[in-house]
Image 1: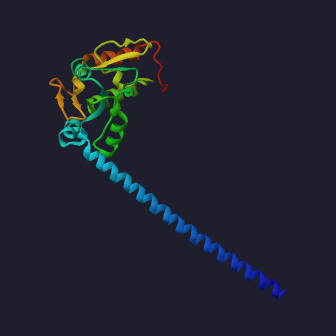
Image 2 (image 1 turned 45 degrees about the horizontal axis):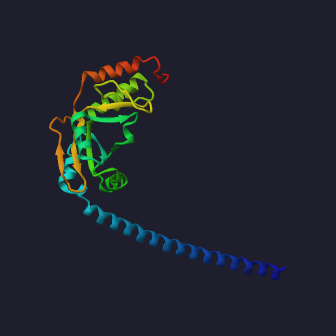
Image 3 (image 1 turned 90 degrees about the vertical axis):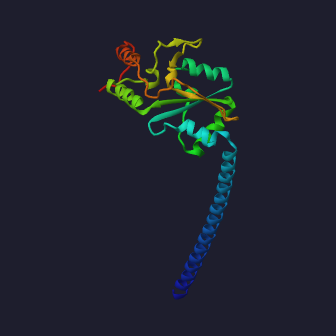
Length: 225
């Protein structure tokens, strides 16, 4: 009986030793993997930072132009191929179909985030339109939308001075006033064109009319209070 107990004790000790051995191997493997991932991450960040330095977009002049009003406004960028198209947006305003975010996207002064978004969009063209709408305007109409319980309504579709038109796909085409266009720039050359009529705080009586019209539309679905 004593021999059996001794035999079992030896087996338990051997198994415990083997478990400790395996644990040490796993820990060493995890450390190697972690070090390798850190090296890869550092290489990626280093490469990204070098690419950022080479981009005109990140020059002090362009960064200041884009983010001058970041503390008081929401900033969006829209890329286009032709200078004439960008200049027409300054004159006429920004047209968008149904969703503002199909062709425009919000940006912040976070350089890495801006770099990633820029890399995904720069193939659409060299000319970039800077759209800037004050937080006060955005917050007011967002609050009104919530108070009215409106579904599927975004503030961008209210900020227009013309009734929406239909395109060939029967999408609603909205026109954001040119007052919200800060200007345009060429991300390759750094050339800037400023909109002399730019006003991020611009408010129009039409906006209130649009909101009331949406509220009173018979087919407008609403949240149930």
